[in-house]
Image (cartoon, rainbow, N blue to C red; front, side, top):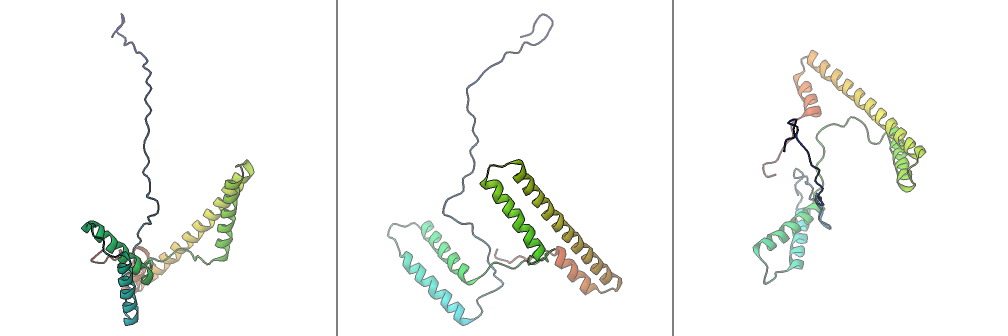
Length: 189
């Protein structure tokens, strides 16, 4: 409603509504299924036979239920197949090169310092000294990893430039594929 000077009068309304956004709950007891290395097939006969035997014994353990639906049977089959394949096949290897060595002793000490500082922050009440020590450890670790990454990119750039200058296209494209290479996907992924 407008007043005498054509201004709008605002009235404050109070409401007692509790808005709550529900968080998505993760199912307890279920693990995320990871991709398995399908390139490493069960080539040896002994591995293949033992995998088949283990799958047969696992399916026999589940047994057939009289009142089970086809969906339940497919779920059991999928679970048994994945669990047996998980024991025989490993996770796929990374295709891209890493910019730093995970076995580097200096990096390991920086990681352990950061982890110890983080544990101190979590175990004690976070004081200024513990949070400062944690931030300092994070800063040093990040500084070192960024320096290693920068050096690695510079070495790769020099290597690729050298291959391009020599017109060695095989080495050039292999270097590019090692750094940015396209993801190889199986047909049945």
